[in-house]
Image (cartoon, one colour):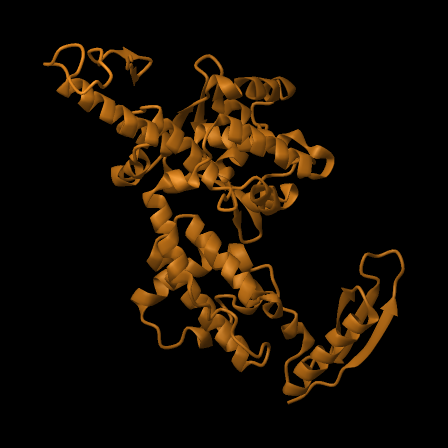
Length: 412
């Protein structure tokens, strides 16, 4: 027990965090001299890091272990994983392992164990819920994270398990309630979308117009941000103005990867006239490059919902516009709600959305205030069809139901 450290703090001007805190020690098994270092903004912060390393070393935890990422610490071939998962049956292990690989590692795996806080876990769980994972999926992902970090507590890496979060069920219930009324997640109209697009561009570094194009394209095609990031030039058919949605860009262990869409469903989405000019402009710039991405960041990088959030200061912008509820995924909700309001038939809407179940699509068919008023007008027209042209109660006379661009026409 116990590892003796030699320490030093070095000032390195020219770095954003100029104070390098370093610890060195002899590995108890190999007797090799090893070292770890961290850059800090102040000498006090550097000394605080060294103090932590010394406290852990006194317990027998080497700095190499203390600075491990969650992915390294909880690797499935490590003794940590075996200890953390002991006692579990096979039928429980499989969903736990899936939660670890598909959600925990892509979201938190790059962080050191000590950097994982209650707030970090809260945000991760919120992202899993917003990604429309089922309640049991979220529960299994939290459970496996709790077990690994509980082992970190036993090993002395951290003092309290930050994964023991509470209240996520209520957040999940709120998300379900919002899905039952998707209108609460949608922007009201095209003008609101353009205002959001312009505000995000204005707030971004260098006022990069591409962020606004991504937002408008995602909303008008009812697509996920990962799918927008994955679209290539060859996926766009300008003869019919459609987009063949066949891949998405998503976080994975080791970085971003391109893979099939959610549910592995290839689908075709219309490109409406409102966004055709921006698509045509992007295609012209990328002429002769069928494999080029249609949308990228300002330096040509791939886009994720987190990249869009950070680059545009999304949270601040939506609050300033009065849409504090709005998440990046709600651009998809906006498009589907608008299509439902426009009268797109449910079986067509399901194909555009790529939903596996028709019941999921039907959530977007809640009537708007306008359609409710039209229903009342239709009933009034029906009731007045057998009466004289002027009603006895002095109310408006009703012209027999005649459609004009899909709306009932009333005449005073």
